[in-house]
Image (cartoon, rainbow, N blue to C red):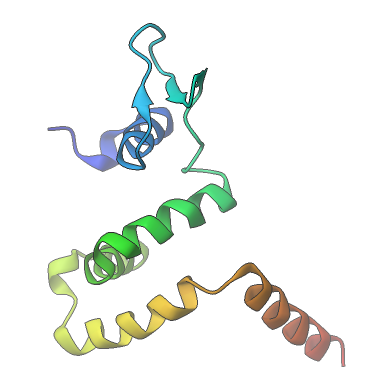
Length: 117
C-alpha cells in the first residue's frame, strides 16, 4: 500500500472523500458522487474549512490516534514516540480542536483586540 506521504493532494482528497462516505464515480475517474451529482472530491488538503471537517470526523472515530498522529506530523516524529503523559495532554487539546466557529471567532477577537492595546 502506498504511504500517505507519497500520495498527491488529489489522491489523498479522493481517499478521504471515500472515508467521509462519498462514493467513487466509476464513470468519471477522479470524481465522487454527492447525492446524484458527480463532482471533484472536497479539497481536504488545502481548504481550511474542509480540513476542519475531516479533522472532526477523525476525532469522532479515534481521538487518541488522530492526536498522536497529528502531533507526530507537526513535530516530525512517529506517533509511537508520543509518551502516555503526552497523550493525556493531547486529549485535552481535542476540545480546542473541536471548538465551534463562534468560539474561535470570539477567541480571535479578544486576542486581536488585546494586541491592539
